[in-house]
Image 1 (tube, rainbow over the protein chains, first blue to last red):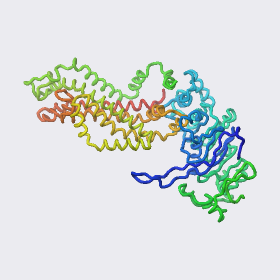
Image 2: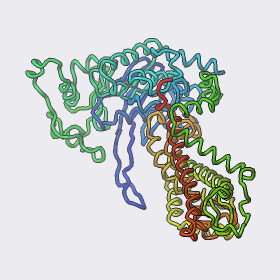
Image 3: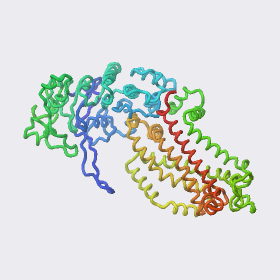
Image 4: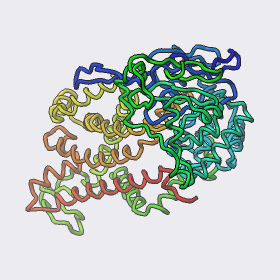
Length: 330
Length: 297
């Protein structure tokens, strides 16, 4: 869980992102807050992929955005390559933005329909003044397109001329333009066809090997996350409930929520699927405005004890390399 | 350095952008091309009215009052015996200039207020939008009368007043479009690379709200020409005997509608044709500026 400072790209401690809920037509006052992310801590090592999974609304995208400082952080600390970036202002963030980029979920909304591919991919270069002249600019764009498996002569086309998978490659090329060390991938394949998903996921892995990239890979598709991640953090209602190396998490899930999630993965064989014991958790995710006291999962947990209703379990490290927030373990 | 993206696409087409645009207009958008030609013809008539008009716009011929259209007077004469055809030509000068410039001013005002207020949001947006609310709630006529009585009537004041009047109201439409565009992931992507505010507004927001902006402009041209006639009627527009179409329609055109229907018909038809032409041209422009509508090259 903890890594030595030099090989740690990102270190997040007790991160909280609360969105104010306002009421009143004229004099708006705060009547509460949505605790989208409520005390999240994790490290990401250089060259690894940290998968961030959980159902809709659990705060995984918010975590990704907060790490990039695209959202106001309520409290906590984000350290990027050894530098505390929690309190940096816009101007101070600018040079750091070169080293942290994002790939988006929607391959249609993430590319400006009025710009040519060269302008889209090259925009980060322009913003940071990284191309000496037009020839260098074109050359760099061509190299980036080549890197993601597109043809250099596609640079003068518009986004609408491409398929979803190709558009996602353009988005990846744009994220690579500044040679970042960290890329936050916010459900980058969930909008693609299954056959295309595999290609794009493989591209991510290939690029990681070639360029030594570090990913935070946000997804809800457990199969995809399993394929690409080295470690996986499971989120529930604004908290990380379990974080473990991929193999261990899938082989021996500890937290009841992780167990429920993995049990919900369908098996593509009707015979096995029918005979398999189903562990279905009941109820709905409680409101992030009023999370339950104690363990946040106790309202739906099959193993809930009295202690869970009052005492909030901390994320505790067990047998090295993995951590779980549950009273069942210690 | 900053102009890299602008210069990059210029490598592909050999001929200039304007020429390319005209070729595509006439090839792909015949109706829009028709609108364009009509606009050019009226502009031409307006510019060269001094040479084209057979009579002066205020040349009175008392014995030829209220003559119907004929060989000598193509569009007839009005109640003072002035040649309607000449007045229409001179009117093209005034009305088309007023229409285009006031609509252009209105569009610029709408875009500046709408884009900045819509994109920045928050308290700034709140303050600006309450000002716009107040402005829209205030009767136009009162503002017009106050301003005109201070600076005096004339073409300049009319353009500025109508431009501001329509511009501030129209900013709501632009703001609405901006609110939806700014939520797109590509805007987010630009922010996350550290792009400056002017760059985001200019390269990401503005091009993507052009469709409503063009429609706003084309509808405003007609509205302005008609509004000017309302002002002229109250003595607040371009003062007579200057021949604006709106003034002709609401002045002699209305007063002598039964004796000489051509007095209302000629300026009325001209306004209709110009407004229609600008609308179809605007629609074609909107489509041609959108890369998605371009089809194969």
